[in-house]
Amino acid sequence: MKIVMLVSNACRPDPRVEKEAAVLGAAGHEVTIVAWDREGETAETEQRDRFVVERVGPRAEYGAGLRSLRSFRRFWGAAAARAVELEADAIHCHDTDTILAGMRAVRALRGRGSAAVLTIDFHELYRVSRMVPQRGLVGVLARAAVDLIERRGARAADLVVVANPGTVPHYERIAGSAKLLLVPNAPDMELFRPLECRDPSPGQLTVMFVGQKRYARTLEVLAEAVQSLPGVRCHLAGGGPDASHVDALAVRFERVTAEGPVPYSLITERYACADVVYAAYDALVGNVRYTIPGKVLEAMACAKPVIVSEGTWAAEYVEENRVGVAVDATDPAKLAEALMRLQERPEECRAMGERGRRIVETGMNWRDAGASLVEAYGRLERVIASRG
Image 1 (tube, rainbow, N blue to C red):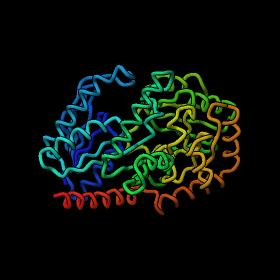
Image 2 (image 1 turned 90 degrees about the vertical axis):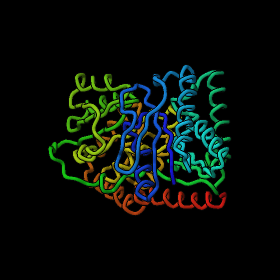
Image 3 (image 1 turned 180 degrees about the horizontal axis):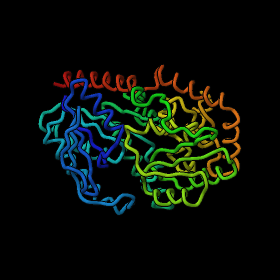
Image 4 (image 1 turned 120 degrees about the vertical axis):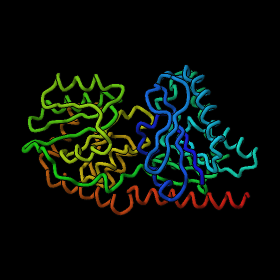
């Protein structure tokens, strides 16, 4: 099939989108990602190993709230038009903010006699994400609009993909179980695997954070907790909107180091030098409560224990499987207590890491998750044939 994926970022990179495109391309499908380059800083067309990335849409800023609506409408129009030009057999919408473009494209294609199918891929619980206003009447109206778009999209979709197990009940209610497929953000076992550290720090517990620096306060709490524990250090790697604030922690605090963005292919090397991986985010943010960060599963694949935030679905998963600990990520003293326990129990740390790796090897990996997506697209091919 010709599969056109729609994504509202520049795909520079977007690991989940790219992994799905690659696995479908490897299965013989012709895959094009139509992405939105808001900054206008990337090539219009980029040939990857198994797929093509094309970038469309107007210049726009991130995080502009309702002021972005006009720019979104222009992107939706451009993305839908390009999907029709490509004569797509399948439109694959990555997240709620591309659903309207996907539905528009499918209507136009079917109007031309095509049997095109629609896939909606929910990466997160969008209604409680930072992309949607949450306060006051504006928040009520914005969430209602998101719910309406998702319900209409789910009814129109031939396949509904969900990335997080914690959001499955929500999307089952609006899409039903028959068309729902869980494709978790599972790690590639070949890329994320246990490695020896090239530059070990003997005698110290090293806590590693690698990712987008969006929740500065949780990383500041980590830096504060480390100050009361002479045998503990932390390293904060990655870019993101709060990067400058987070990187300044390395100047303010002892035994805190920082670096900028790490290429995806090199993240495993950073994990190799960690005794524990920090994946605690602000639990007051709605999405954090329902999702399991990809960093948790990457750490498990690398046989490293993880620290996550209390009161989240990820906390239940981590504690039930005994692959890490859940803490109040707003309290430096409680975090310091947890770090001290991990420091004093290195054998328990290693056992947590080993359990995590076994879970990845026995199913929670991209080989198995990707295979389920390929199988689902095989069923969609049969749907197209039956409509023809």
